[in-house]
Amino acid sequence: MNETLLKIENILRLSTLYLQKRGIEKARLTSEILLSHVLNQDRTYLYLNYKRSLDINILKRFWQAIRRRAKGEPVAYIIGKKEFWSLEFEVNPHVLIPRPETELLVERGIECVKHIKKPLILDIGTGSGAIAIALAKELPNAEVWATDISEEAIEVAKRNAKKHDVSDRIIFLKGDLWKPLEKEKAKFHLIVTNPPYVSSKDYPKLSPEVRDWEPKIALWGGEKGLSLIKRIVIDAARFLLTGGFLLLEISPEQAKYVKQLIHSTANFTDLKAIKDYSTTFRVIQARRI
Image (cartoon, rainbow, N blue to C red; front, top):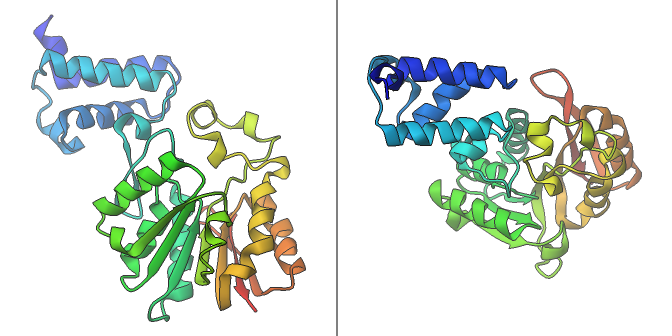
């Protein structure tokens, strides 16, 4: 092979063009991230070694990753990790890729229980464990419980908890919503959840990168996207201590209805719809009477 084609600067140029022709956004950045991953280096390394020629085996691995991205597979699944709350989390197709807007749940959760000496926290539908682990890291005296219906997701979350040294403070339970808690008779200062809330109508409209690769069970919320939200709201009070908080991530257009639903249970006060950094309603907060 021509030695020139093995140089980092040319590899990045060619891979960027390849991705651009296939409609991949941020093609250059994607190429840099994937090459950095294959080399097990940060992106700065690429710029400091622009003229370096790569080993042919490294090049093969890189182009395998590029072809996967060209088919629409998310970068996070290709490299097997995603940053959330300035922490690195293992991700794979069994778990939703953590989104920056979900950090608002962590922020609000900390505010709700930071005054409590030993808060008990429940994360429903934990997925990769991002929310539960971020809260455990920020609240060293907290005991966190985390549930998920997916055995594979629970295994990913456990590995992430071990990686971030919080395994001893997170109890993972497999099961559908409240089911794994029925026998525990536990009550919490805070219940936090990012449930599936994409409606049947909107699910087909999701970008192919999301719709075709991320787990449907973590996205699809039935008609109007409220199937699981209703089940969570109806039973939440049974698992909250008096004065405890419920935090729900929602789709912005669901804010009014979810507030009405919570109000109709007559179990909550101090209802708030909270905007994320793009100034759209993202989180509903309520306090147990």
